[in-house]
Structures are given as C-alpha cells and as structure tokens.
Amino acid sequence: MLEKTGVPTPEQVDSIFPTEERLSQGPIAIIECFQPIPCDPCATSCPQGAIAPFMDINDLPIINNKKCNGCGICIMKCPGLAIIVLDMTYSETQALIRLPYEFSPLPQIGEIVLALDRSGAKVAEAEVIRVTKGKPPIISIAVDKALVKTLRNIRPQPSEAAILCRCSDLNTDDIREFIAQGHTTVDAIKRLSRLGMGPCQGRTCTPLIIRELATVLSKPVESFQPGTYRPVVKSIKLGELAEYTE
Amino acid sequence: MIYTDLLVVGAGPAGLSAAAAAGTQGLDVLVLERSHQPGGQLVKQTHMFFGSKEQYAAYRGFEIADFLLDMIKMPNVKLQLNATALAAYDDGIWTAQVGEKYIKVKPRAVVVAAGANERNILFPGNDLPGVYGAGAVQTLMNQYGVRPAKRVVMLGAGNIGLIVSYQLLQAGVEVAAVVEASPNIGGYLVHASKLRRMGVPILTSHTVKRADGNETLESVTTWAIDEKWQGIPSTEVIWSADTLCIAVGLSPLCELLWQAGCKMVFVPELGGYVPYRDGNMATSIEGIYAAGDAAGVEEASVAMVGGKLAGLSAARYLGVDIPDESILDCHKQLEALRSGPAGAKIRAGLGKLTH
Image (cartoon, each protein chain N blue to C red):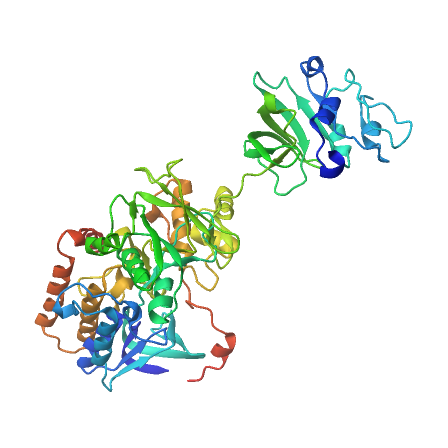
C-alpha cells in the first residue's frame, strides 16, 4: 500500500503504464503521481502540450499519449522525481529507461550499475547508456524488456575499493583515478594526494602504489621508482628541532 | 654533535652483530634502536632457530637476543634505546630522535641495519579493525602477553605466517586456516607439518577475496586463484574470524640509504628495492654498509653473519687491521646458510644484485 509503504502497488503502476501499442511506437513519459498535491510543473513545462493543463493545481497529470514524444523535459521539472521516460524500441531485447538521479558521483557511460525496484531492492544489473548533466541529472540505462515495469532506480555497484594509503585515506579507486588522469609516477601521485606523506612515510603504501601502477599500466614493477626519500623518515615536532643545541 | 667511529642503525640481529664485531676491534660504536627494547624481531621469536652453532641454532630467538646483548657489553659500545634515526645528510651528518630530543651524529662509518616493514595487500575491507600484520599479532602475543584474537585466518604460508600461526595455537587461539597464494608453501615444511598435526588446513593457490564486518572483522572470504593469480568465481569460502593476519612478506627499510644516495636495485627475491652492495656489505657510498633485512630480506641467521661482516668491513675501512680469515669465515657461513634448495631464491636475487 503506497500510503503505508511508499511503494506503489503493481495495479497502480499498471494504471499509469501506456499501452503495448503506444510503447511500440517510441519513447514516452510515464508519470507515477498518485496523490493529489498542489504541483503542476509537468503540465506547464511540456513543449508538446502533452500533459493537459490543470484545472486545479491539485490535479493529477494526464498524458496525451499521442502528443508525448518522450523528450524528457518533464523528468527534470518534476519536483517529486516521479517521471521516467521508457523507450521499448531501443533494441530487440532491451529497453531504455531514462530516470532522474540526484546522487554523487554520477555513474559513467558504460558503467554497470545495480537496477533497483520501487522498494530499492536489487533486481538486475544495467548498463549506463547516457548521462545528461541537467538539474537533476538524467541517467539512461539499458534493461531487459521484461523488467521495465519493475525497475525504477539505480545504485552504483558496492565499492570493491581497498585502502591503499591508510595515513591519507586513499583507496584503489582514488589511485586509479589519478592514473587515469595521466599521473603515472609515485611522486606525481604523492604530490597530488599526499600519499606516503603521513606517519608511515610510505613504508606501507609504496610497494602497493608501485604494484598498482604496474598493474594498471601493464608495465614491469621495476620500471617504477619509489617517491623521493627526503629527511626525515618520521615526523617529529618542530620544537624538538628548535631546542637542539650543540 | 656526537662524534663516533661507527654508527649502527638498528639493534636487531644484524645491528648488534655489527656493533659487537666493530666494538671488539676497539672502535667507538653508537647503536641507535627505535624500540625501548633491543633485539629487533628476535625478542618475540619463541621458536628454536635453524642454522648451525655459529648462529646459535636450536636456541630460541629471545635467548639469542640476550647472547648478542652480552657481546656488546663493552665501554666503547653505546646502545641508545628509544632512538629513531631520522635522516642522512650530504655532509655526513646523521640525525636521530632520542625520546623527544633531536640529536646529530657525525660518524666515520655507518652500518644501516634498520630491518624491514611488513607488506600489505589490497582487498575490500583491508582497513577493518581486526586485520593485522602478522608481526603486530606476534608482538601483542609474545612481547606484551596479550591474547590478540579468538579465531584467526592467516594469509601467507611463508615462515612468518607458519610460525605465527603455530604460536597463536600455543596461546590458545584458534587458527581457522592458513591461506597461501603461491602453489607451494613458502616456509620451511617442518613448520607447516607442525600446524597440520594440530589440524590447521593450509590452502595453497588461495587468497583473500574480501574481509567483512560491521564495526570490526567478522568474516574473511577466501577463494582459489588460477595460474595467473586471478580469483576463480564460485570457489569462495567464508570463514568466520575476528582476526585476519597478513603475512605476505617484508620490504627492506631503506629510506636512509636512499637519502644517503646509495645505488638502489630492484630485486623482488630480496623484498623489493635494496641497496647495491659488494660481497662485504659495502654500499655504493664509501663508508656506508648495509646488513640484515635492510640489505635484503633473509633469515635471522644470515642477518647475524651479515651484520658481523658489515662490522668487520667498516672496521677495516676505518684502518683496523682485520685478517682475511675473519672475513672469509663470514663468507663461508653465509654461503652455507644460503646453499641448498631453500636458498635458491635468495641466490638468484643476490645474483641480480651484484651484476
């Protein structure tokens, strides 16, 4: 029950889903707006006039399936993030779902994300096809056609990152990003990230960063030098230096 | 400024042996030791050592530390505890932090015997409390008398992984499994057999996939790996454990040698970057010698002989007449310790070092 759980029932979802025939003709917006609340940006923003003007600001939106061309403007205008665009003509086996996504970081094109149902449960994996950096950003995912009524959200895969530099709290994802940006020496990554500049002074992380560079760049480990070693090998208080007398 | 003939960095088996050798020749020696207790890793070694009688075979590590400490009891050798060597400067001055005081040392020669650092590996959850270096577990258990865990998964079947697993059993800790990525057990097989007799499985060609737990470690997932060291899906086993010990090898602690400008060579068989050195432990910088794990990770027996050799070489460099036989005796001992199939890897590494 939507009122108790926040999850619309399958019957409610069915009630707002376009016909098979309409779906076979191309992309279309689907609006999951089941409660009359005072809100009308979907109707006022539609360039096609596909959402009938509201008589009362509490009206529920009604889509004219013939006029809607699935442009997706309304996705960005809906304060309730209640609108998706579904394109069943995307490919033979897959449909494209465009949905609003307000979490950082945004997924990357080509990334495989978890596809979630309306209760947030993982149902499948989906490939990110497009990332539109609007307000809010809109993510297009390709999904199995059989799941289009079920899938309604995405989430990144749980991080498989491992801590590489404890002192400066850098994990393998952080390091791979630096390498992807073209920083391919221990010293370059050290200067950007403070890797190896904490209490351990590189003792733990230097062999790990060298191995990571070698793995990512497919080069032998011995082609990487450790960072430049400078005095002192551990941090000491400036006062101890200042108090030094011959 | 402290002036001394020989500065020795580290009071482990190598450093103490170097100090004893040079001190016996009448040189002024200053030994800097980071810990409050001398002996390095020896003090937490409760097992009997291998080697022969020159390296105190069949004695336990902590007993050997006492023998070595007796050998440096002479007025011209000073052991400074709680002293971390900090830096080596171009003008030949070395600095250290003693307690909370900064000191400068101007030695005529130096033996760097700083030891090694435990390696780590990358897997999700590697920062959970309960994931330890095996050395830390050994320190808690054997040096401070703390039972560090209830149930342990050990990663690494080299000598450290095998020995610490056995000592955990002795301390009343359950060892769920020893996991080793290599196809073969790396440590001495007699150590492995001791564990197997206690019912501990050793899984070769396996590694840790991930560590999980809410606040602290609760489970360790291991899996089999193929010949390219890649995990094989659906071979996962989940072990409940409150501690995961990482014993995947050591990296020589060479920062001071890098700073001093010594030529460094990458030799995986010796633990990574190690100082180039000649057969008498002299680095590429005149008057600077390296010994023990800092010169390449090997057994404590080798560290003691190598330390002695470094101490004698430094003494000779400082003008003391050292008979060739003393040097040759060290060479002979080292050769014997590295001979045989167990020393093949080390020999290969040394071959790369001196080319």
